[in-house]
Length: 325
Ligand code: PEP
Ligand code: MG
Image (tube, rainbow, N blue to C red):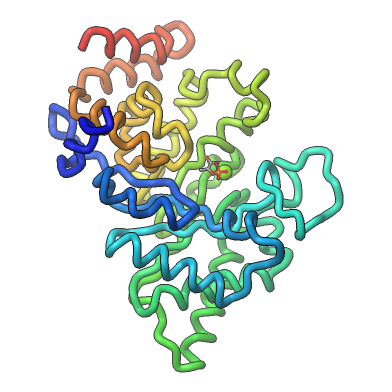
C-alpha cells in the first residue's frame, strides 16, 4: 500500500466531481518534515511547538527555539507551515513547569491561559518565531482560545514584539498571520467576534469533541462512547464552516478526525476543504478523495442535518455510501 500511496503523491487531491481539497501535515518534530516529499502534502497545517518543551529538561532558550523553528521552515521547503503557540497542560505535561495539582487539568490552568499569565514565556516564543521567519512569511496559531478577548491579548503581545524588532532594526516577517484554534465550545458562539480579527482559524477536534461531549479524550471507556461525527457534533462543525465562509476566513481541521476516512468524508460533506493530519493518513485520505463524487453525498448529509434525530445516522449514511462505491 505504501508504494501505491507514493504513486499518488503528485496527484492533486480532487474529488471525481472537481472539488479540490488541500491536505497538510500535523507535526511537532523536525524529523517528520522530510516526509512531505513522500506524501506530496501542501505544507504543515499544525506544528506543535510544545514537543520541544516536553522533551527538554528545562525551558528551551530563545536561541534554541529560533533554531528549531528555522530548521522546520527550511525542511518545509517553501510550503506553508503553521506554528502553534505552546499548548501545555492537560495531557501534555512539562515536568519543570510544575503548578499546583489540579482536579481537572484539561480544563485547568493550561495552554493560552498559562501563556497569557506568564507572558515572559509567550513573548520569548513569539520573538523566536518572528526571528525564525527571517524576513519571510510567518503563520502563528493560538491554541485553546476560550474567548475573543484572549485572542486580542495575544495579538497585542505579537504586535509589541513586532515593534520591538523594528526598533532593533531587525527584519520583520514579510507577512504575519495570526490564527485562532477553535477547540473550546464557548468560542462557537463568539465566532462573530473572533473571525473578523483572525487571519485564519483551525478546528482542534480532539479537544472540541472532548469538551462538547464532556468525555475525556484520553479515557478509552468514555471517549469511544460518543461518535464525533454524530449529528450534534457535525452540526457544531457545520456551524463553524458556515461562519468561516461568511467572514471569508480560511478554515482548516487539524484534529485527528481529518485523518480518518469516514470522518474526513463527513468533513468534506459539510464543506471543509483544508485537512491537516498525521503524515501516514495522507495516502488513504487522498485515495478516498480521488474516488469520491462529493455532490450527492453532500446533499444527503445536508438533508440529514436538517432532518435531525428523525433522519438516518450520519455514520450509517456515509458507510452505506462508501459500500456502494
Ligand atoms: C486538537 O485538540 O484537536 C488538536 C489538534 O490539538 P492537540 O491534539 O494537540 O490538543
Ligand atoms: Mg487541542
